[in-house]
Length: 180
Image (cartoon, rainbow, N blue to C red; front, side, top):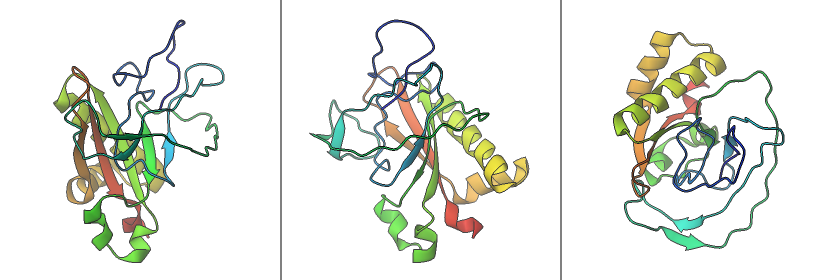
């Protein structure tokens, strides 16, 4: 899923785009029913597109496919003016089996999720962390130092996709319930 980049012509969502984090082949197993995805918008109308549904996918998606499927989705859109983000963000429900051990009141809050996409895994990881730090500072009002500490002790950094050489996808999730 993604939105149009800031240039004219035909748009492709494969492999993940690196020029502005506008989505693309965003194969992240935590993007499930109930996820609230945020994408930067560069053109009037955004020109949103979705496809490539998966019934199952592991973190890393290391081969040419996951368990592909048809999909039927209901989407709602909102425009958050005066907000700048560098890459795809989401608030996601618990979708990883390791997360289900958390208390129910924490699970209800879901997770912040940020991403980094590009040809360098380390830079992608740094982008995902920086975006999480920015989000925590803006949304929770914590200091930069507190946000980095939270990412270190409560964040989960994952390689989501290696199949789209030479571009890879990294995400960071952090439980929102720790702020309740």
